[in-house]
Each structure stands twice: as C-alpha cells, then as structure tokens.
Length: 420
Image (cartoon, rainbow, N blue to C red; front, side, top):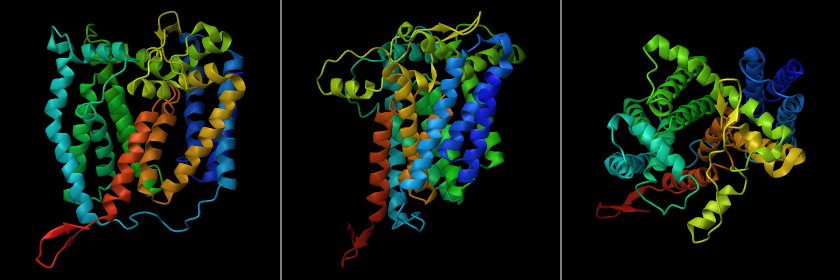
C-alpha cells in the first residue's frame, strides 16, 4: 500500500505543478512535503513501526482534498486586481525610518527580555539554561499568562526580521539592517529555549525571497536547508540532550541521525495509533484551543490542557509526542471533517498565495507563515494553533504597509516637519 500512496502523491505533485507552474503553490508544496515524508517512511524499512493502510490512505486523501480546495479557489474566486500590488503607494523614507525605530526598540529591549526570561528560572548551572528554559515553557503550557510588553518583543523581533528581509533591496544600508534584525530575532527565539523558532524563521525568510522572485532559488535552498539542519541539530544537543555526553563531532552526528528521523517521520507513525484507536490519546491540540486560551486571558476559566501530548512508541527504541496536522482535525471531526478542513485550508492558502504573487506585502508575509506551516505539517497543525501569531502578523503588517507606508512627513511653511 505504501508504494501506491507514494506513487499517487508523486502524481498529485506533478498535477499541481502542471496546474500552477510553480512548486511554491500551496497544493504543490503540500503534495511535495507528504510525498517526501511517506517516501521517507518507505525507505526507513523496519527502523520504524509499520503504518496501517487506513492511515496511509488518509494521508493521500488529505493531500487530494487540499488540492481540490486549491483548484476551487483558482477557478471560482477571481482576483480583481490585474496589476502588481508591489510597492503600491509606499513612501520609502518615512517607512524605513519607522522600521529603524522598531529595530532600535527590539535591540534595546533585548536585555530586559533576557533578564525577565532568566529571572523565572530556578537554574543551578547556567550551562543548562536552554534545557531548563524549555522545561519551564513546557510546564507553563496551557496556563493563563498576563499580557507583557517585554514578552511580546520576541514576536515583534520576528515580524521585524521578516519586514527587513522583504525590504532588503541589495544596498548596503538595507542589507546590514536585515542581517541585524534577523540576528536579533534569532537571539530572542533561542532565549526561549526552543530549537523550533530558528527553524521556522529561516523557512519563512526563504519563502519571502522565493515569492518575491517567483521561483525557488537552488542556492538559497541548499544554504537555507543546511542552516535549518544545523540550527535544529545544535538545538537538540543544547535543549533535549544537554545532560547527555554524546561524544565528539562524529559520534554526535551518528547519535543525531535517528533523532532527526524521529522528528521528521515519527509523527506519521504515531498518528497511526490515533487512527486505529482515537480514544487512546487526549485531544490537547484541538481546533478550539485558541478561543479557549483567549477567553481565559480576559477572565474566563475554561480548562485548557498542556499543549504537549503524551508519548507513543514509534519503534523498539524511540517514542514521540507529535502526531502531524491530522491529529488536530481527526480527533475533533473524524474522516469527513479532516478532509473538509484540509480542502478549506487549501482554498484559503491558495487565495493568500495568489495575492502574494501579485506583490501585496501583507499577503507575502502571511504566505511565508503558511508555507512554514505546510512544510511542518508532518509535525503538527500550525494554522489554527498559531492563530494568535497569525492575527498579530496581520495587525503588524497591515499597520506597516497600509498606514505607515502611505504616510510621509510634510514640511510646514516654517520648514518644520509635520506628519500628514
């Protein structure tokens, strides 16, 4: 069965590429990710437990539904604008000035953020900072947290890095600002004790570049892919295995290979348990999680479980607590609901992608986030669970590109600058 599913996913990928003439299109990207992942299962042999035919069929059916949703949007929902939306009405000098202010705020706020983050830890040995921080984050998952300006600087730095990268036109002034903003965002992300932040940032920056140029740059793909692998590997050693002596460089590489296999393919195997016995795992990543957490933040008291599910064995020596994008939809809605959710998701992301290809900056940023979610769909659901971040992204970039970018200081008769 697995050979049939891999072949069918490869054919679906070819169909999507023919339809869109681009691997950047959501449906093509989704088919590519799942074709590669199921093929990875196939080549893994008996190093992982086998996956049932029902589960493999759902993986294929989900990709088909995603494709049909995308085709429906392409055929039935036209984009009225016929010309490029890039740089529409943007007044660069004042816009860049505001970006520089945000950059200064992110830079000056970094020491306060690091102090606040470290201040919450009961840390005996600073060498274990990342592991200790990660444990604290896991334990705090599901708890109600009050709004903190300093805490939100992490999100601001991430969004700023995306904006600076998008506005990097190759000149020295724009290039060093982009590099500085990306570096600051990486520091904020690493300070949270998670390896995922750096990975997601690199993936989003890659897709911003590719959507701007309209194609995947092989050199950027190699450099970006290598960076992702490096960040993830170092993160594993600093966060997950900080208390373990993995030996030298060669020994560490050998140790990490099955761990990376676990993170990539483990969720596909683990979801098989849910598929065969839905009641065996609690639905801690339900579609209503964002709404419950939001309600609790304004005074409600709904029970919200930890975001991290229980572990499942995926081989004789490995286990995992990730269950792919299907975990969220299947436990809430079953077969039909999963297919419908993926069809709707495919349609929405295709609409965003079409706007992004026309150069609408807000859409480019949103699609970069969406593309990262598609790439990581073998890990978990990164759309409804990331709705808080997505809404902040819409607000931040709408303000930047629909308000700030169309505002410019004008001079009065006395020659003093006044904001119009």
